[in-house]
Image (cartoon, rainbow, N blue to C red; front, top):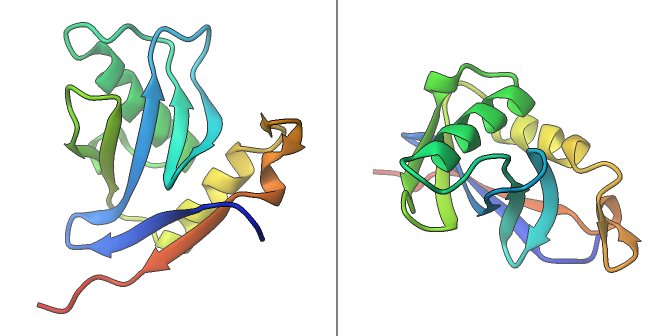
Amino acid sequence: MTGLPISIRETSAGMVFRIRVVPRASRSEVAGIQGDTLKLRLNAPPVEGKANDECIRFLAEILGVKKAQVTIIAGHAARTKTVAIEGIRAGVVAAILLQSSQGVKKEGRNLNAELEFSIKPSEAP
């Protein structure tokens, strides 16, 4: 595969990866990749934590986990965030995110041809 990898790390907090959010979108959806981050459009304004709440809700929905299993661990007030997902394996996260990106176009090409995941084991304590 070509393109930049989205790195999913296994840590004690769960499967950790970076996202870039675009608030105030017409609907919440996976929008593609930007650098080493997954880009999400969110149907919520960045006011009083509403975009963060929608981010957690949307990720929980597409990954099939409870909202309590999704945590924003960095970037609460930024568009680029680091999220952790508990109770799900990295390979499953990668497969679901890849499936969720079906049909997303990036510069006229299908994102599926470019989306690549790098799964890294956690550092031993």
